[in-house]
Image 1: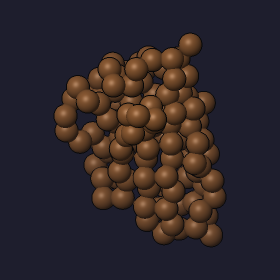
Image 2: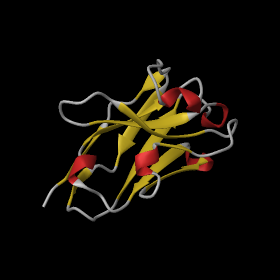
Image 3: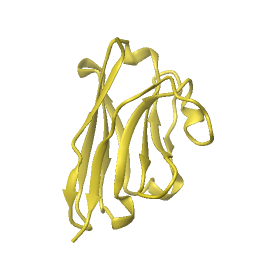
Length: 124
């Protein structure tokens, strides 16, 4: 059974940092892209970043590239999202997902699998 389990969310003050984790099981992450999405209250879900050994390059939303970094630990089957200089607009539920391609995280493409999400709240 494929599972994606997010963790690391919480409440943080503006300017703070969080590191989200996405633990994958039931498949080999090396063979798949893994992406982060987020959904702010009242807004549509949006692609944040993606990592894939088969697709070299940096896949990250332009507006976030200076503050967010995606990385992976293949030995732990885990993908991370490091978020720095957090702003109230970063508040939302953060999901990890498996796309067919990292190119698919921007646009209306279906994902193969989704996690259940982790809440991030940036507030003073």
